[in-house]
Image (cartoon, rainbow, N blue to C red; front, side):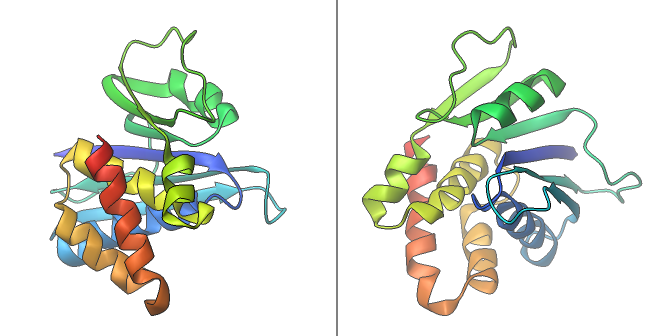
Length: 175
């Protein structure tokens, strides 16, 4: 098993943190191999950002995503840039309020999640990345939800854990 995941959006959306958490969950609690790479603009917020995670039950010899099995697109620019570079049969998860996928020529499953709206309803817009991470985890079945939850507990400040946990559960429940 080898799963290639790309999480993309703009700086400040938490795409790097989402990738780090997914990789951490797979290695520390899932007993799998994982590599995580990231790229983002030199500005702190507003430029393109992506995080790539490869999860495997075998040693990973090449650390870059070639064709993603799962793509999370949290901005229109991210969708336009990375959707053409997916593997046949992939799943693309988009924030339905930020990404218009209706005219896309790609043939894959597109899962529309109102991540920003769910995060707003939970009280903090900045957790939309956790909503998407919960949706990805539920849709992919690469790691169990409780493994993701444990990894989130390791990676976020303790006073924000419940909020982040609620966000991943809301994303998982939505899909």
